[in-house]
Image (cartoon, rainbow, N blue to C red; front, side):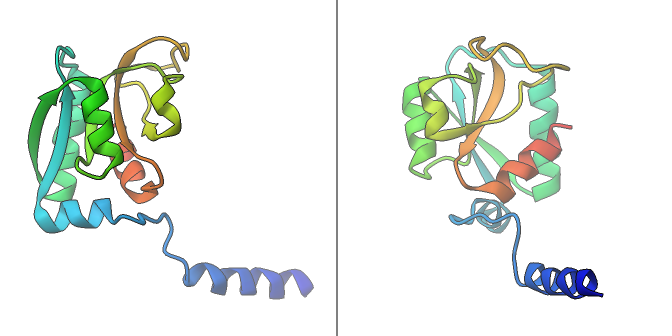
Length: 140
């Protein structure tokens, strides 16, 4: 009986939560503005898996892709400041930027590559967990 009460209380608490959260409302703004502000690292080779992820992401959000090319440092800085929604490039999981932005899974890889290997992946703002999940689901 005690477990049932605890489970019920936990369920009521979760109803009040809006998980996963986007403190900066990235996903809501993408859907509202119908634009995904994409930073593309200059010289990053297109990847069929990444292209497919972008197409599915565009379909699921009803947003068009607005691409901006630049160097990785500039784009990741703009991402961190909220001036971009997504950055595509070839990044290592152990990049110094990994503490400032979220690097998604390696596009087109079945297994996790070594952390020091630069592979095609998307970067998103840290803490924007709803948006991070939306991008990850588009990549599946």
